[in-house]
Length: 257
Picture: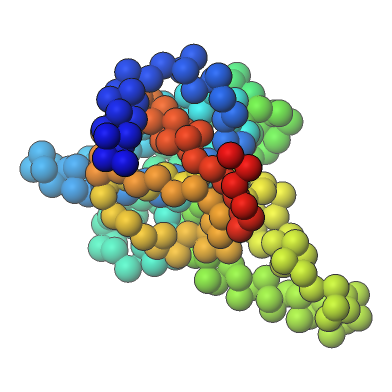
């Protein structure tokens, strides 16, 4: 087994786009972008410098995912728990969507990328919400990659809100208790039309989900790396996809191999 792991690692170091395109590409890739602060600390820079560099990586990986034919790219940009961070950092993080979308919106439009947001946008500052709404509006007709930002998002709160809405619909008589299925509950979630992620990538060496898409990730393939998000490259993205392509997805059944 260890020889196989070593061989895979050596092969992954020289992967090309053409290599992974020979096999099925995951339709929906989700990324927990972690390590911006540690990247900055290692360089004796303020944490905000790490967040800025991370924003540049978002642009690079979005473009590359689109080239590979990924249909949905979900990025965990700001969680409901991130409000606990120092105010100066939170204020800067709330400016990043505005900077990113203002700077790269023409490119997103030209590349046929459609912007969506998963999260409680009503809790965002006005300037952040306006930038997000503009990007959604101006890319609404695009048919390529869906760039889905999880912004002010928490999965437990999402599930609670979905259950509350289901209860209301049952009380109104528009829904019967026996109508409640897994697929129906999924349709009430914020990600209702996106489909569950096929592959989850988390950077920076942390091995947890951090309240991200807990329902949706039930059968997602997980890939963790020690690489900090600002250092994440197209090659790392290829390595994650290659690892996904080597796995036997049984969804609780028996392997066909």
